[in-house]
Amino acid sequence: MNKKIKVAIAGVGNCASALVQGIEFYRKRPEAAGLMHREIGGYRPEDIEVVAAFDIDRRKVGKKLKEAILSKPNCTTLFVKDLPDYPVVVQMGPVLDGVSDHVRDYDDDVSFSVADVEPCDVVDVLRTSGADILINYLPVGSEKGARFYAEACLKAKVGFINAMPTFIVSDPEWSKRFEAENIPAIGDDIKSQLGATIVHRVLTDLFEKRGVKLTKTYQLNFGGNTDFLNMLNSSRLTSKKKSKTNAVQSQLNVPLPPDKIHIGPSDYVPWLKDNKICYIFMEGLGFGEVPLTIEVKLSVEDSPNSAGVIIDAIRCLKVAQDRGIGGPLTSVASFTMKSPPQQYTDSAACKYVEEFIAGKRER
Image 1 (cartoon, rainbow, N blue to C red):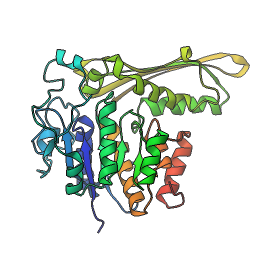
Image 2: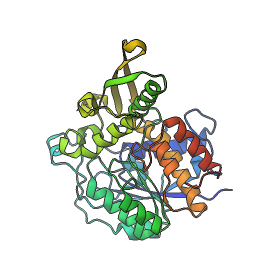
Image 3: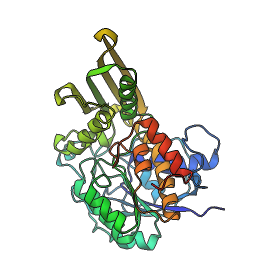
């Protein structure tokens, strides 16, 4: 019987809720659809165990994990109704830059409400919980917060998965630090299982492979969860916009001029809740430079879409730990993240991660 993969979560929001539900869903229905890999290195989804969790919201801090993931402002779909009564209690993390001032103008039910509690010692909690891995699920724009948790992982000797668009694993200096400590890391900015970025990337790669010159493109996204509310503050979007734009530009032999590509969140529509709507437009020149256009509309439940990828990243990182591999896992990151240390086409990334899982590729 496999041992558990012990996971800590920073940010008990919609993505954490979808992940926890997913672990239970596939425990009960092991052959159900929706997994990219049923098993990785002998690990199945039900082998993942959450042993620690951090948040800053008064409705979550001090509550058991089961209650916290069902608390407002979380609004993702509940696809598992009967969750176990996990013993994990959500600890208060440092606020730092995790909450944008503008969210205070919105109703308490859809925005963050900071708990009046002293932050815990995150490094000590990671050590005493026995966590193998920490997942950073902080809100977009939490640059200081992301670096705080990365630093905590280095001190506690815990693997790091950076699911948000702060450039840490893809940053050469941070990369060297994780490698020096022989701690595996995967980042940055999680790709959805079938989301806006991967659809846009695959279509861009298709243009290249079929000899069609992409001349201009946009991707507009909107939704009603706290992620989209948070991103109404444009000052928090610098890394997010860069991450999503570079993910698409990386598929082109010659990148588009900045004025011919626009990618990024566009608005917050509260009643959409965790549903995300994406519009993609692409214009190109085909044979004889005859123009063509593609328009795509994608509608997805945002957080389960993310969990479909993070559940593979967790197991791949644990496999790296079992093999004694530290530093950025470039093949896994290219498959699971928008801004990995090394960009590949998605078909190449898929091949490389399969080689990593099979033990034919070190990282």
